Length: 411
Image (tube, rainbow, N blue to C red):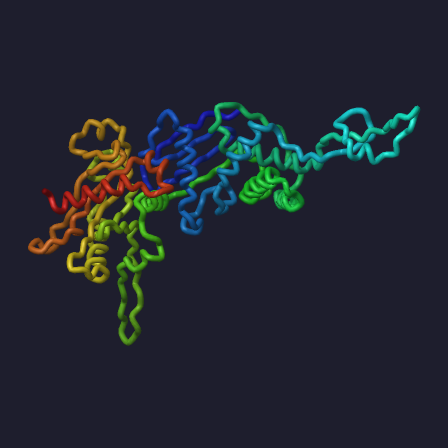
């Protein structure tokens, strides 16, 4: 029986987020800004899928159990296996068996090749060739059940029904991978090939040699890597290869030695729009839940944005009227009462984008201020971001850019 998941909100960006399952109890650790709505299971699934956005697992070690492997769960394969079972029942590898009997489907082409009996001018075929589909290769059927059970144990809670799958593992995972690969290479049936490919994905990402366990863990620390990537996708950031020139670099010149790179700063998102460069910094801070000014980006983050602006303004943008703008993008929950009832939080695009205010410093040249010396803080509704990050949202982008331009040059 699949239990209902327990949602536990995490209030720090560098704490574990993800899922822990033990003895059937499912605990989902989500960012504090996550909102539980009517279709919350779908949103939880989107959240789990978003974990793979860290891209290179070496960037952030995945917590996946005692072995601490670095594989992402093939969630789409889990879903496919469960859906296949719901629609078609258990899968058995079947082959057509031909016999001389009166039961089964008559195979006339084969029957007519038999020697008939002639009687009183009649042709009689007394040995009918019939066929039946019989289950073969019980090991494949068992591997299918093991993959299905693992899928159900991990994400069966998505579905509003109970599953009970009785199966035991009798061979190692590596042996099962070999068997499924052989079956895959020996069939031209598209449906079978799809099924075997999903099974292989599950087998290859299984921890160790045990397919079934009473304990699973999947997640990461530092979810802000994921948030940065979702923001970059939603706001149509330029490609990573193009972004490198926007990295300000520091150098060391040691005595009698060649200059050495100290390090590079890396902006999260560079948005090019209407002749302007918008430098967006995604911050997984808690202001979008607490509405506490102490949960806004601190001075060092403000200075870093200004440094990005200096770099672009002074070295990259050689036009007569360079336009460089700065903004923080924070996650927020648009349905929290302290935002819904706050007239000072300006909301756009059905509240999915909000404007909080601006940050500035007291040590810049007040007589010749640059546009990018003010950093504008916007909120993006976290649930909306989870649902829509896979493609640029040009309506949101247009609103963000328009609002910044209005703030820079008020009418």
